[in-house]
Image 1 (spheres, rainbow, N blue to C red):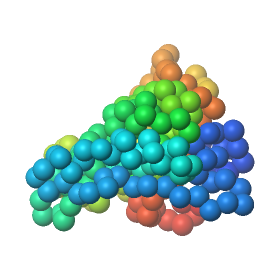
Image 2 (image 1 turned 30 degrees about the horizontal axis):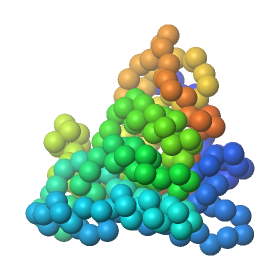
Image 3 (image 1 turned 60 degrees about the vertical axis):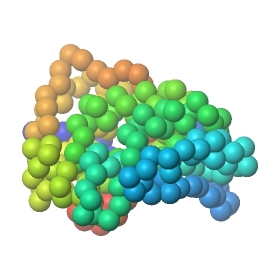
Length: 214
């Protein structure tokens, strides 16, 4: 397995990133809002009007709007989470906002392939003018993994592989990628992020050690 050893970055690397700068304004307490405002319980009507509220809080100076990534509804889990696809929904909210950061809480890197994640993330980052911040995780709903043909117990390892692949795709590099999740040579990802990088914030432990998270 060939790795380019592209590591995470500290805050200084995102000093010019509009979304990160909005969320982590120096010396300020910032506030965001987490969607959905009301949980789905069989009636899609509870989701009506969310875009209007997000537009209003954008005007009021809120820092971020967060959406969850829940591919499948498990009635035994306790809640449906975010019903809409996170990237599609954030793209919709992009058109209704101007400055608020658009954040995932969290994109499930252990389920989605890194090429699809990187394509969606870079597209949304460009459409929003660099406002995307990715909260990422390994997933907490066991029923989803066999539906994807994956082993729930291996989500920690797959999470790390997906993060590595994602970072290499977004790096300004023509080096080949040779990993368990795929091999890539003589091709690269478009579009490129507005500021060259997209912030990744690991939520929870995602089955990783503290040194790795650090």
